[in-house]
Amino acid sequence: MNGGDPRPGQIDLWYVPLADFGDDDQAACFRLLSPPERERHDAFRSESARLQHLAARGLVRTTLSRYRDVAPDQWRFETNRYGRPSIDGSLQISGLHFNLSHTHGMAVCAIASVEEIGVDVESRDRDAGLDELAATVLSRQERERFDTMQGQARGDFFFTLWTLKEAYVKARGMGLALPMNGILVDLESSAPAVHFSDEIADDPARWTFRSLPLEAGYIVGVAAALPADKLKIRPARTRAINLPTTP
Ligand SMILES: CC(C)(COP(=O)(O)OP(=O)(O)OC[C@H]1O[C@@H](n2cnc3c(N)ncnc32)[C@H](O)[C@@H]1OP(=O)(O)O)[C@@H](O)C(=O)NCCC(=O)NCCS
Image (cartoon, rainbow, N blue to C red; front, side, top):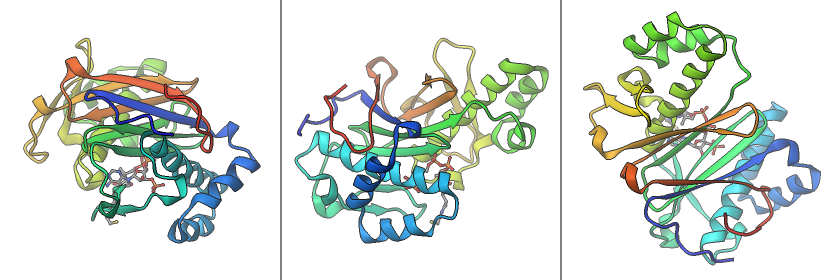
């Protein structure tokens, strides 16, 4: 199936609840994997991590094949020095980029026309350990605000900031090599506004951050080097292995 390129400003968020990822889907996804992907799959000790990896790898392959005439098992990937996967240069694909995120019970693949696209999904259920995480994830101002909050609002505040910051460090391709507490996100404005400390060395005007709920209990952060007025996010629930219609 060839649905063409994502339009400029468009971000397609294909997501798979892993409750839907049964034995047949798992077997079909496994058949798509490259030998190194199979090796990695076999090395997981945790069943949850194994399923997440398998679903995410199947999802990215079948998703990319929606946009270009390359069979799902024919995609090849390369990784940068920080581990970010991208389409292998030998395939000579331009204008099509992705980023993956997975957590217990969910896998997400973001597709965009720009290389600087990042996505992060987290389960909103988790309340334990937020204080320790907050110490490394939040800036001083965010931490002060967080410390005054309670209950659901406190969790929502933390997970919104965390997923947006993770999405940004992934869009930069550097992951946790960038300090998350050097990214300042203002949630008071109608859309998240971003500022950076000197350590981040980037221009906030280049970026748009968006946060959205995804199915019950999951929150997604998206960061893209795209102008806010042009950005359109299209979430679409799918199966890791099927190729239904474009969202
Ligand atoms: C990227 C990172 C922030 C992801 O954190 P996370 O919230 O645990 O995981 P997520 O599910 O959101 O994302 C994982 C996916 O992001 C992608 N990814 C990995 N490294 C990435 C990076 N540097 N930038 C963008 N995306 C990355 C991968 O597709 C990965 O899934 P996979 O391993 O199953 O292929 C974290 O793993 C990290 O900082 N890694 C970099 C480590 C590093 O510097 N390594 C250097 C030597 S390899």
